[in-house]
Length: 173
Image (cartoon, rainbow, N blue to C red):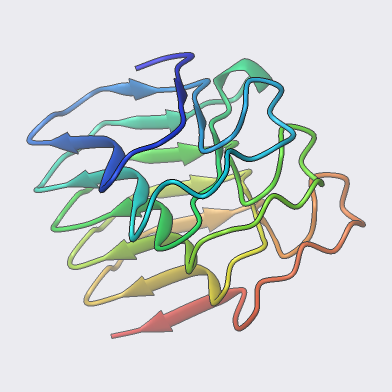
């Protein structure tokens, strides 16, 4: 699933259910083609990218700028790994900011959620900000996940504040 512009949706912009080894890259979700302005609020209680039901081997984003997903959701969550999803990679995505990595475009409740026995996933080189609660949530027996080199509450430039309203990372079992 590559290089799509997804503006308005009710529940999930992209959902992977019982699907393994997919690539989700270069998509703009909730932002206009320029990547620097959000669509008017037309989604409610929605999730940008939802991977669930024991999925594995999926790549969300990737190492190159063209692989990056730009995700702005007005409510709920940018990316969620749920229900025993394991061994997935979430790399180099911008959540709550524009394609420049610093322009605040509003965010949902959570930038990312890794929950309900979702284990051994790699979360790396992402920018997460402008969330009404937490940047990243890890809870409900999600273990063995690796988080490295993410910018949470700070822009891609390493200096611009893109605050999350509560916690940068919240871990709860």
